[in-house]
Each structure stands twice: as C-alpha cells, then as structure tokens.
Image 1 (cartoon, rainbow, N blue to C red):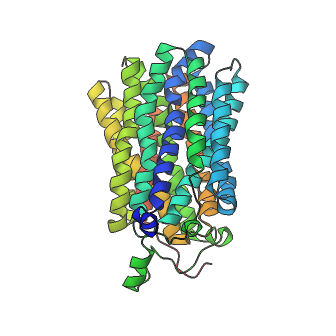
Image 2 (image 1 turned 180 degrees about the horizontal axis):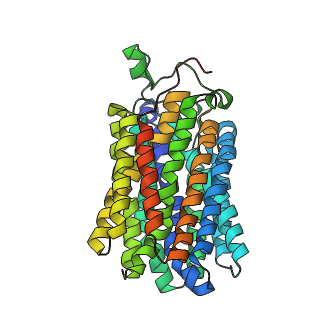
Length: 413
C-alpha cells in the first residue's frame, strides 16, 4: 500500500485533470471566432455588436475572477469547478436559442463569462500550490490544455456547424462539457496536505538551505499585495497581453475569410494559434524557471508585437500560418508566467484571491480589444488600424517587462 502511495505523486493527477478541463472550457470559448460570422450573417448583426458580447464576457469574467479566487482559497477547486462547468453548460445551451441581441449579451457575456472565471483561476491556483521548484514548467503543461483545445475544438466547431448548424452545435458543446467536465472536477484537491503530502520540490529547496523567489519568506494578503508596485506592474502587463490577444482570437477567423481564405482553413488558422501556444507554454514556462520570469516575458511580448505588424500584410495561407505559429508561441509563453510569478512574489496562502484581483486586468484589456477591432472594421472596412494599435500595446508591454521587480520577501508593505 505504501509503495502504491508513492508510485505517482498526486500532483500529476491535478495537472492532468486541470489540463483537460482547460482544454474543454477554453477550447470551446476560443471557438467564438468560428461562430462569429455565422451570428453576424444569420441574425443580421454588425461585427461591433457581436464583438461587444465577447467584450462583455471578458469584462465580467475578469471581475468575477476575484470571487472565484476567494471561493477556491476557502472551499477548494471542486466546488469552484462545478460552478464553472454547470454555468458553461447552461450558457452554451441557451446560446442555441438566441434571437435577440440582449440574449447574446446575457447568455455569452454574463453566464458563460461567469462560468469561465471559475475554471482557469482555480485550476492554475491549485497547481501552483502542488509544485514549487518546477512551478513554471508544470503550469506550462497544465495551461497547454488551452492550446490543445483551441487547436482541436475550433476546427471541430466548424465541422459541427457544417454538418448541423450553429444552434445545434452549441447544444452539443453544452453536453460535452457537462458529461466530461463534471466527473473530472471531483478529482481535484486544493492542497497536498489533503493527501498527506508536501508540495513537489519542497524537500530539494530545504536541502539547498537558501531562500529564493521559489520559496518566499512570507505570504502576502491581498491588502498587502495591492500596496506594492510589483502588483500594479503585473496588473498592467496582464491587461496589455489581453488587449491584442482577445482581438486576435475573436477576429482572426473573420479577417482570414475577408481575404478569401476558405472557412475550414480559417478555423484551422485560428486553431493553430492555440496549437503553437502549447509549445510556448511548456518551453517558456520551463525556461522561466532558469532564465527568470522577466526575460521570458520580454521574449514573448516582442515576438507577438512583431507578428501583429506581419498580420497587416498577410494574404496567403502560409503568411497566416506563420503568424499563428509565432504569435501563438508568444501568447502561450506568457500564460503560465502570471500564476507562477504571483506564487513566487506573494506566496501561495492567498494565491487565489491575489490572482483574482490581478485577473481583473485582462478582463478590461480583453474587453477593449475585440470591440475596438469590430468597431474599426465597421467604420473603415479594414482591421489595419486595430492591428497596429495591438502591436503598439505589445511593444509597451515588452518595455514594461524590464521594470519588473519582486517585492521584498518577508516584508509586505
């Protein structure tokens, strides 16, 4: 029995379950871009109108992250994930019935926005508690689920739409989430102590007999964290990331179709952003454990900024593939760095609520980006101005990464 207990560290079960849940939740969420032109054409809505629902989704889920973090810290990930999956199932089922714009905003913006917020944060916050020394790498593996989901489920959504219609497709998505997600969510555990274990890497760090950013001497409360410059710089960087990212995830499929890329190929181009992000999450998450989070952030932001400029001239499939591969790698590389650096700087005791507060930032940035792109297209007939603004924001984020500095460990102010 003792041998069986030590054979597989339960933290890897947490990683596997978290990866699958993120695959389903965010893979279907990033399929919104595939449904985008269907909604516009079938219901005679402008791109700004349909973009606005996703912007509301980003805004709502950004603020609800704070609540989700508190629920995860207090009650654990099982409750949080049940709330997440049930809300998403209801939201997607209701999406199959919409006929008025206000329904789109409530069903997707509010209900699905609430559901998604109780998924990503509890998963990544929980994984951060189970691993210490390899935290960046493990978070990269976990969040690779988002990339796998985008790579596979965006084309899958296009296939469903082609075989059935967009309304039936949303019903199928709701069923898949409920049938697979709910049973898996009950395997999660908040802390290693619930299984009589220590976080992976703790013994090695104790043996080295030194304090590093991997083992902070104090756990910051939210009140203490928000008084630090480090908190607000990380907040700004997260907002800068979400602004162009969500613009791309909502409009890339439509942009490709505008230049006469076939629908399934356009969905594949969108999916490839997620696919290449898998490598980015694992490679940059692992690299950040060695070269530091600051250098990793700069590399990722710079790559994304250059690719936004490239996108303006993209017209051929290979140009879109190159954009998706490099932009996706950079975006994916940023994702595990956020929860990792929060754990590094502020500890893990209040990780969920601190992460939740910082996650208001992508809610704001991610709300502005898609709506701006939709509005610019409606007014000018082109995405060029919006894409240029996205590139500028990413160059600013790359510059900000140089200013990143951890708060003084053990001395919250």
